[in-house]
Image (cartoon, rainbow, N blue to C red):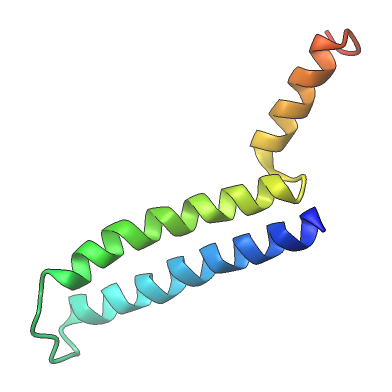
Length: 83
C-alpha cells in the first residue's frame, strides 16, 4: 500500500512540474493573451518546488531515493549492523 501511495504522490509531483513548467514557458513566450501577469509567475514559483518535493517524498515512500537509503543506513548503524 505504501508503494502505491508513493507512486500517486510522485505522479502528482511530476504533473505539477510539467503542467506548470509548460504553462510558465507558454506565458514567457507571450503566446497567450494572459492579462493578469502576477498570478502566472507566482503560481510557477510555488507549484514547481512543491512538485519536486512531492517527487522526492513519493520516491522515499516507495523505498527508493537517497533519503530512504540514508535513513535505512542510519537505522542499521544504530543497531550495530553496519559501521
